[in-house]
Length: 116
Image 1: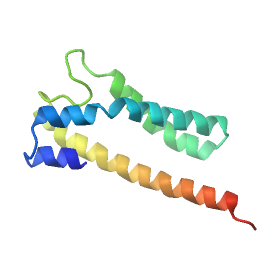
Image 2: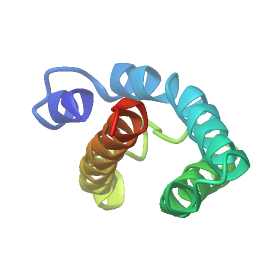
Image 3: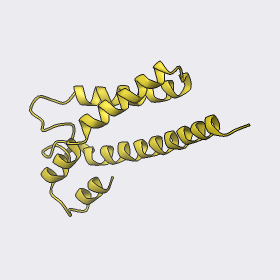
Image 4: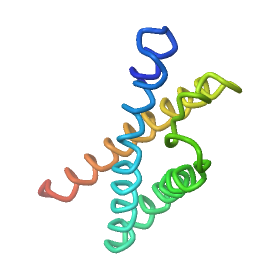
């Protein structure tokens, strides 16, 4: 969010912004897929079903990158067609999702450990 905000305010150029963001796309896809599979294996159905759409969206977004682009975030296209605004909106939604998941995981951890 901060990097996209810096690009929006012209504090950094599009190429450096996109290279910073693209280096985190693959770890994000792998990490979210691993967490989703672990929830399926451990039979936490609600959390698995909550994570499945986000993991699917991350994989879809990574697979559907056009062949000439630098990555999910492309410096030649980020200012065109309102992509910067859509990337900012997606980042805010993901932030909210991850905060919700953090507190759900924390509650689940405390409720499992705490004596009755």
